[in-house]
Length: 105
View 1: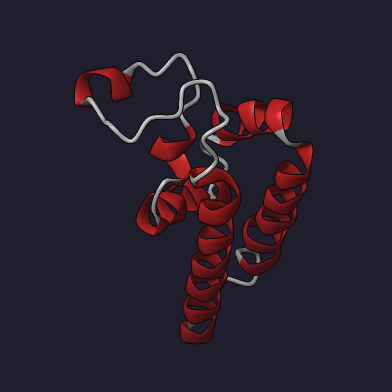
View 2: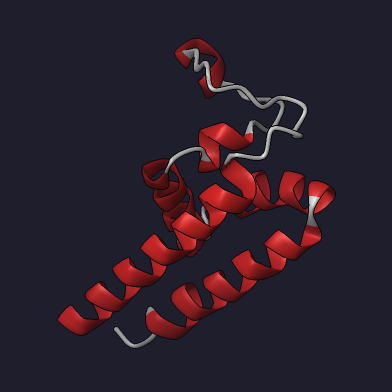
């Protein structure tokens, strides 16, 4: 079980770095901003890529949400509209983590 936790943590970390570089720092998203207002984060109607993938910790939290399939459509739908190739990376990540490794437990 320990090796599985280490392997999942390593996979989440590496994918988080990839997502920060590909999505989190992309300023071409219409609602990209690094100024975070906590009142507006709760009811985000427009996808702000910095909220989900702006830093490594934010990206790791978003990937954990994808791994548990809790925010799949919230995160991937705006990404698919902008760049579908990134969604293919997230699909591979989700299949490996949610269905592959978690079924070992």
